[in-house]
Length: 123
Image 1 (cartoon, one colour):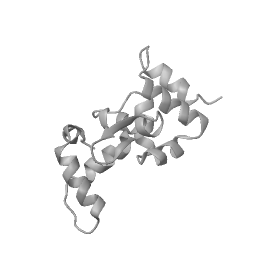
Image 2 (image 1 turned 30 degrees about the horizontal axis):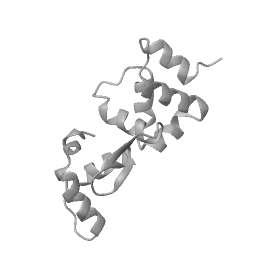
Image 3 (image 1 turned 120 degrees about the horizontal axis):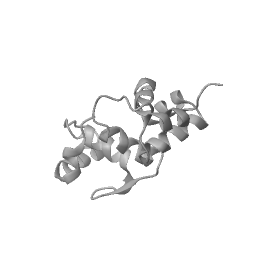
């Protein structure tokens, strides 16, 4: 029988496993790695590397996405109010470049650039 994502994570991560890795492995076990990757907007290869504790780069950005998408993590945005951390991450990414035409994007460009979380995004 093929090992589940949870089996792989338990074997790869020292105890206690990070809660967000556990949530990621559970989601992959319940549905599929490809479906979870799509929900997170990342590749299946990245998800596999994370579950198997072989991801070579900083895990902070993907942890933030997992917390927003799978763990219902929220932040208080000065402009939009409470929103999932992955949406905050998306707005911060868009705020790297100013684009005219969408009033919400213009407002968020200004708001994100003043927010202390702005410098945290790297992915």
